[in-house]
Length: 274
Image (cartoon, rainbow, N blue to C red; front, side, top):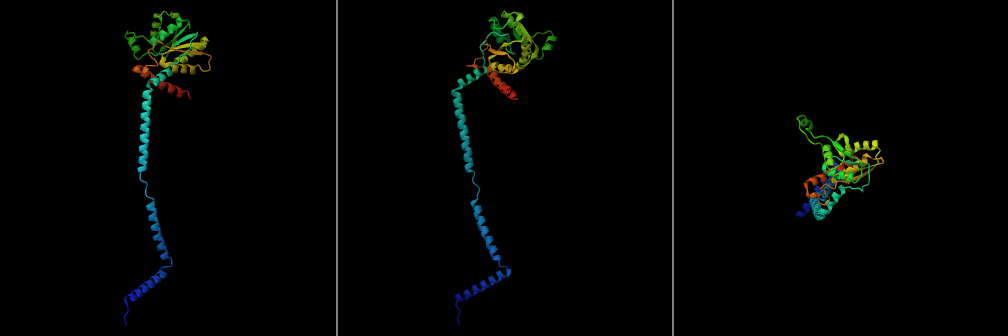
């Protein structure tokens, strides 16, 4: 009796299936399910990993380049605007430093440390106009080496001596001079000494002569020192100075003065916040 090849194959497959089912029941009924879950998890995990690929940094680089371009563009535009309005901007900075008040008769003219010649010229003019009977002259801290020079027989004009010599040469009588008793290094220290004079003499108004570039800072310092006192403070920047608001940037000397003055103004503002 002949048996076909297909029937033998079917019979063999059936036997294998029975054996697999017997092994499955013997090992445990959940083994095949757990294996299927593991396989499904592997497929799902692979899919998630495939979907969660890291984002390419191309967009970040593109965004960074855009920011740099915008910054460069803004800087170029700013430079063009400043260049075009350069003169008005610099003139405005110079005008900001210069404070000048309408003058009327006062009790005393106050010269400030530094620039004795231009201040002496202005103080003498105000004195001759009859705006005040006294001129306060600051006694500045002497330069290093002055004592050694004097010990060796040398002579060196001190700042107060330059004020006095210039005022005398302008026909201002010595009786009008009021020389400071303390050596000062700054406008702040002088303002504190002047305050003692004003209180002791019961003065009601003063005219302060100073360099144009220091006028605003001088006014702010004296105003702060005399806070709470009934004293009228008038600022008269020397018109004999070559510092002008409309051309100060043409000379390195005044460029340095303006830069330092704004730095000192910032420091003065911050210091008086507390």
